[in-house]
Image (cartoon, rainbow, N blue to C red):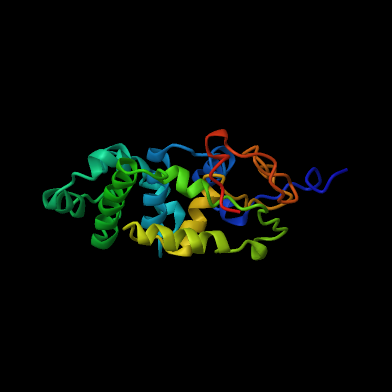
Length: 213
């Protein structure tokens, strides 16, 4: 019997609330490869900084309504009146710096799409590592990686905010760029991109030629 088949073990954070468990079992680690989807996840990870992911999940639909479905083109055009509107919206996390960062990051995303070079999604996926972590326990799950540090630096250079290595690593894990599911988790390898031992098994076809080794 394989290690993966014996004693399934989810991450401890996923078992703390039914909403977290649903997110873990249906979404976390599944590939997100479009700019809008990556921008939304990056925005939510930034709002999560210093707070719990459960807080963000509970407010996710309100965030989507408040930020125009996380359409970068629409958010990039937000004005000071929109900032004031968001700061008065009790349904979301009302942090001025994070709100402004979300707008700034939409503008940076649009600039990337308007010039020659990678889009936001293509850039993030270009940092897909050759080998993903293979944690047996929660304590073995890293909070950063070489790739997340390098990507964070590149994103900051492109004008993005609230993109520290920890936030970027959380983004990478959430959208399948790396796999931090525990080895015995029933979700290990759920993206179809990683083997149980952390070796890469596949690459999203649109990004195969852009990986940074």
